[in-house]
Image (cartoon, rainbow, N blue to C red):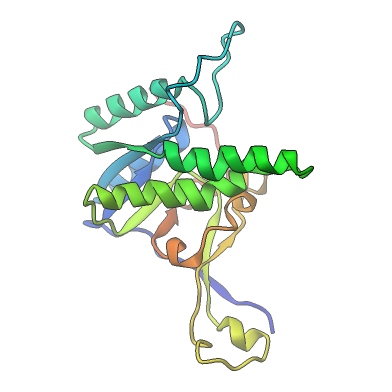
Length: 220
């Protein structure tokens, strides 16, 4: 028996949507689209850089990736954007979780002769874990959590148990599942597959709905 799925519904007008913002184009566009949709948008950015570490040399002037001292530039960009668009904004400190779940794990795996993948570890435990814990600790009761990732979320129309001809007490449960983005060249599902379904229930990847295939976006 094949798995028949249907996409999840997108956030409705009036709902509270937390948007994980990185300072990049994708998550910024998501925030704009949701606000135009009539949602109450709350922007959040996770701060992971250990400020006690010495600043690394950067003579070439390159920006760091997702972990580095110049995260302040991203936070400043998000702060300004949210202020200009009347969006509530918070910076969530996830340094302790990032150190434990990503950096310590990374070092331990290398020392054990294995090749770690920090992004696959970070997403379920930090970006969709500690970050959302921080949001709830602020007392923000949200309906959805959206990011700028390129992936799809679907729900099977037939139960997982019935697919394998099994009969369990939970066979009527139809868990949320991650599927590939329409534009496979930008697909990020492989980085997200470990996020548990109970978290995915409130997650939406909003951008591919409006831009199912990547097109250059011109601003100004």
